[in-house]
Amino acid sequence: MYSWITAYEERDWQTSTDGTVRYALLGLGWWTVDVVLPAIENSDLGEVTVLVSSSTEKAVDVAVENDVDRGISYDEFHDGAAADAYDAVYVGTPNALHLEYVETAANLDKPAICEKPMESTYERAERMVEACEAADVPLMIAYRMHTNPAIRRARELIEDGFLGEPVSVYGHNSQPLLEMIPDPDQWRLNSDLSGYGTSVMDLGIYSINTARFLLRKEPVAVANEMCSLHEAFGDVPDERSSSLLAFEDGVTMVTTASQNAHSDSQLKISGTEGQIEIYPAFHGEATLRLRRDDLTVTVEHETFDAQREMREELDYFADRLLSGASVYPDGRHGLQDMRIVRAIHEAGESGERVTLE
Image 1 (cartoon, rainbow, N blue to C red):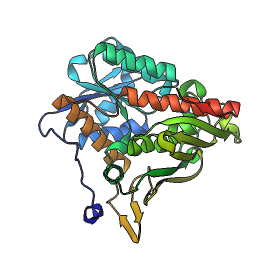
Image 2 (image 1 turned 120 degrees about the vertical axis):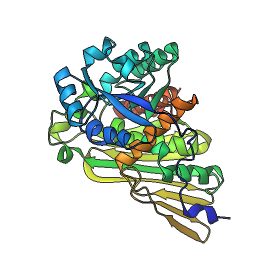
Image 3 (image 1 turned 45 degrees about the vertical axis):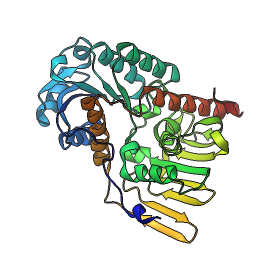
């Protein structure tokens, strides 16, 4: 019965083998330059042809360093410069700047893949979705776990009844942000750029969204405790966050997140008949530990680092554009996460349980 759980099937989503999507990359921080750009250049269905940054000079310099054809400024992008040189855009700027670039992409009839979280607030994320829907251009939110083979195999197991009925979820994601980026003035600690906060928006969203993807269920109410103790977190409320989410069908979830803690990530789903644990869950590798009756199985995979995760995600997006198929997760899917994050922060501020409409 369980002979097929001992390996991952990669790229079960792929429908296209021919064609290339040319990308313009917006926001040339370390993630875009060191992870996304090489991920696309090593991909099967994509290439980078345009880089977009705060100044033409910076964009051109980075383009020359990375053998990319064009470098333009944000202003030039808004004016439609080099629009004939790319087919789709990747938006990797700080959260509060996503909307304006996706809106311009929609106006230029260019599909967009936008980093999570979608924007700084639910309302701005909603405007993004509406702009893309009005222009009839695809919008995908960059949840890289959706194309991770371990997560996809966990989804298959749950769908096929390995857990029985899902009962509870525990998710955790943390990292020592100030050790990784030793700058207290960075954008993730600036509420004007990050949005509602930092730990839930940037880290907790992984647990929440992956649980939604795996279970195909939605939260109906949330409660939360959050605090910020370190002086660098004075502008954001959630250096540490712990949330309780009530999902449909009686499933409960506890999720914790911190931008100022030891690096760790895990996700565990327990059901009436079995349990699936993913550890580490969101920082690469993604090993499955499966338990049911007298069966215990560990399903390992070669290291699936961030660059490889982005390669899979962006090839999935390109596959959908080349085939004309619909994308998932789309803008409406991402908008639901923004609704959940907003409710978590409302619950943290009020100390009251918040119902999701």
